[in-house]
Length: 192
Length: 192
DNA sequence: GTCTATAGCCCGATAGAC
DNA sequence: GTCTATCGGGCTATAGAC
Image (cartoon, rainbow over all chains, first blue to last red; front, side, top):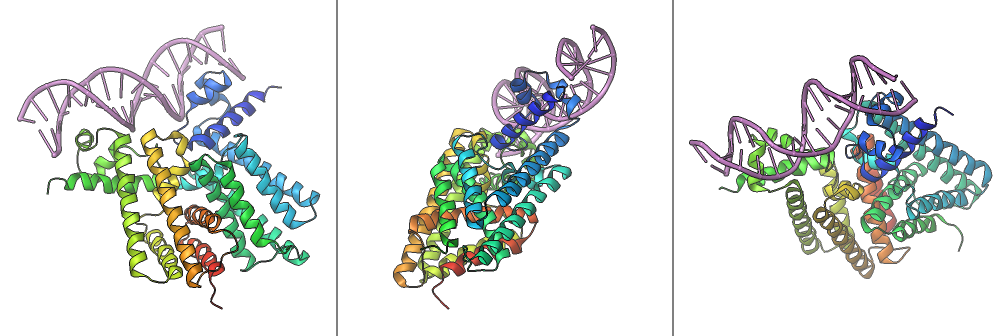
């Protein structure tokens, strides 16, 4: 298939962004990995802004598909949140995606081109929305207990997960991520 | 005083790092602000690595002095934590320091020179340690209630604060930071 | 201490051959 | 679609005058 190269460019760009952020990765880095010349990348993605926007659009589509799948396949809202945390714990442990690129780019927001900014903000909104719905469903099902309004708990959970990713990177410790997220789930749990 | 220039370089570097991260700020940016030529910065700080390390060392010294002052001046451990959160809320609102540079650099850790990495990690350790001590003192004084071991709660609080800074940046909303941190304090509170 | 000038390198992006 | 070659500019850092 012809668009295989574009996919491979997106794959390596995604990895490089997760490792270094926006400013510190270059077309030359991608060219090294994909075994193509720098100039050829411009055939598939006209500019760095367009490339990173495409990476984020794909990421958001995948994440939204993933949480949709969780929602249909796991009836228990509490277990759904646990599955989400477990997914990221695996990404961090295997270093396939050591940090959510939206979290890293969110921290770097002022330096980003406008199109990229918009995409990052959308990711925050999507995830916060899913957390809220899931928490509310859990309350209704009696498996989740909240101390604060669901909107605040969702916002806090999003911040906690992003912060946990940064701590995991700072300590180079997957265990820290697991410790923090398991702690959060324990607080939500109605089980003894 | 002669070292005034060095201080002004540190000030503008600190602001620029908070705005852009490590890779995306340059000597030229500092030169613009301090009204000095790029080359002159090298007289005060031999390299970018040395400059950023100096910024972080000063930051850590100030933060540690600040929390020391809080500890001696505010007897109530719960109120100490509230004062800490309130301090950052002010920084974000006035945009004097819209995000903790250690949190941003923690996210970018793999790209940083070794000396800078070390300094970032130290900041995480210092703050985590103060959170733990303060939480434990609060439990002993009966003003703080914990659901989990103090080490886990401290680690989680550190992650929550860092994540809240990123969310505040992503939404361009000081209110989000306040909402998240106040929520965390409410959970710790033993007051009705 | 600050300046001018510049070395040496990397960047994103474009032109045009194949 | 991928290549070579190159442009124009930014970067950190150094040399040496003042």
